[in-house]
Length: 189
Picture (cartoon, helix red, strand yellow):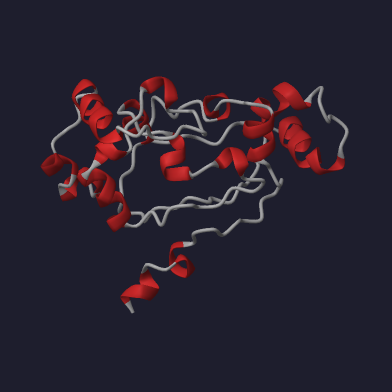
């Protein structure tokens, strides 16, 4: 039974969701090079990365592809000031506290948890996002730490000496101790 609970069938890994608009991160991030922060404006300062308001889409789409049918939902949302009801892809249990800004500001890159979204026509959950997966990182965060100028680089690869670099970054970023990072109250509040 434990195998089933940790399987992609239960964790929803690799499952794409039908969205009101089939938004392609591959096109916007991969092809056009749009930085994560352009749409997810609060990722560095808030617990939530945020879903962009429709006006962010319209910054470009008032001019580009402004008459295509599949973007009518976006134009209608902009005209009526009614939010588009996106379907959440990455879902944690309600009893888990997760803060995007802490992770980003402590050197964890977007693709560490979200995978290579710059290659995803439709976003799906790459990691299981279960407690064991989170604890693996909290026990050894050095394996995933990046220089701050690489946090939003979807193509970043850890260097051969990542263990050494990670230790240095952990000191520089003033990471908490493993005991603090794995304390129940860190994520369960």
